[in-house]
Amino acid sequence: KELESEAIRRQKAEEALRKSEARYRAVVQDQTELICRFTPDGTLTFVNDSYCRYFSKTPEELLGQKFMPLIPEEDHKQVENHFTSFSRENPVAEQEHSVIAPNGDIRWQGWINRAIFDAHGTLVEFQSVGRDVSERKWAEEALQESEKRFRQMAELSPFPISISSSDGRYLYSNKKFSEVFGYTLEDIPTARDWFHKAYPDPEYRRKVMSVWKSDLEKFGAYEVRLRQFSVICKDGTLREIVFRLVSLDDGNQFITYEDLTEHMRAEGELKKHREHLEETNTALRVLLKSREEDKSELEEKVLSNVKALVLPYLEKLKMTSLDANQISYMSILESNLNDIISPFSRRLSSKYLGLTPTEIRVANLVKDGKTTKEIAEFMNVSDKTVQTHRDNIRKKFGIKHKKTNLRTYLSSLQ
Image 1 (tube, rainbow, N blue to C red):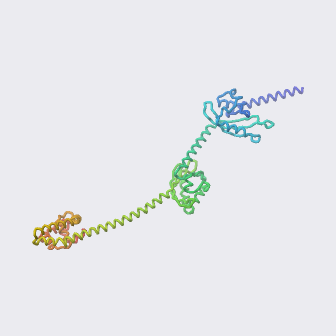
Image 2: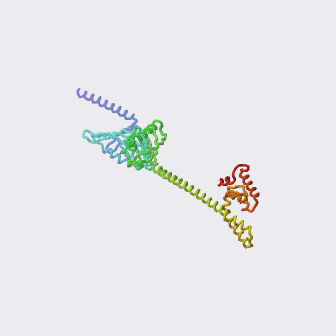
Image 3: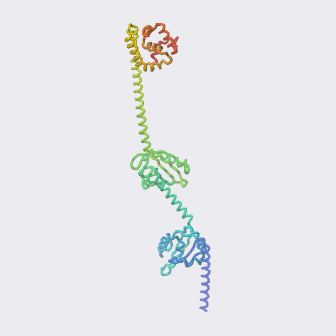
């Protein structure tokens, strides 16, 4: 009777175990995660429905087979090394690796693996729960590639670049930043460190920080602010920098810096050069004006002296008894003198625009202080003819019937 009771209890226990195992299998089969068990050599001993659907295979096609053919060959070593790292002290570990999908595409899976040991501490089996993480993995790879491209462009940029966080920490600075300013991220871990190093003068620092804070409050994401400040570099040199500050939508600050120091220095040198040229040009203009005045004065003197000291005597000689040769020499002499003074006369005649050559001659003699009688004798004409020329000159200059001295007026035309 006692044996019979024991048999009944054992039967009930086995029944309960079968039901429990059935419930366990039902739960496992209903999971959306991929679940499998395999021996240390990689032979699959259990796969759930999700695992089978993922690889488009039946349990019969998978059980008793190794799972390594489902993984690209280049990942085999990584996976093997992972499963040799388990111990009784560390029986659980996570891993991500690529797999070959049924259509041949390469996808990614993330697994939580548990090592199962027997009572003697011998590894007998692994149980793994996994899911497809391809979308996240591809997004991470795209992000890494984007970051890689950004870093490549930033490092090749001819301008210094930095990125700071919304809480004032410097997250990134390129090579050019260190070249221009001399500071690395270790030197300026926070914006506060930058302000104190780059703007050591307290008053100027307060001004810069005030402008900076105001910009951050006024401008939205991706709006560019341009500001120019004087920056003290690590080696103590002063540089004029144009800042281009852009707030990103995550609150970080993207900043590029343009060094205008050499440009402004060249501009200053150019300004000095322009000022020097202007001073030189002014001096040259004064010198040329003086030379022109000297030239005009010389021409006036030559013309006046010839008319006063030479021509009157030639006129008088012409009135004396001369033989044919003397008359010929006199004519040549008079012609040559006229050729000498004609350029001067032409330039002076521009002052007397509208006058005839005879009127110009009379005007010059009047200006030289000659009286009507003296002019008549000099030109070998009557006083009345000279007076007529004087009247015509006054008329052409618009001073006829006016109490204007003709000699004074003509002298004012110099």
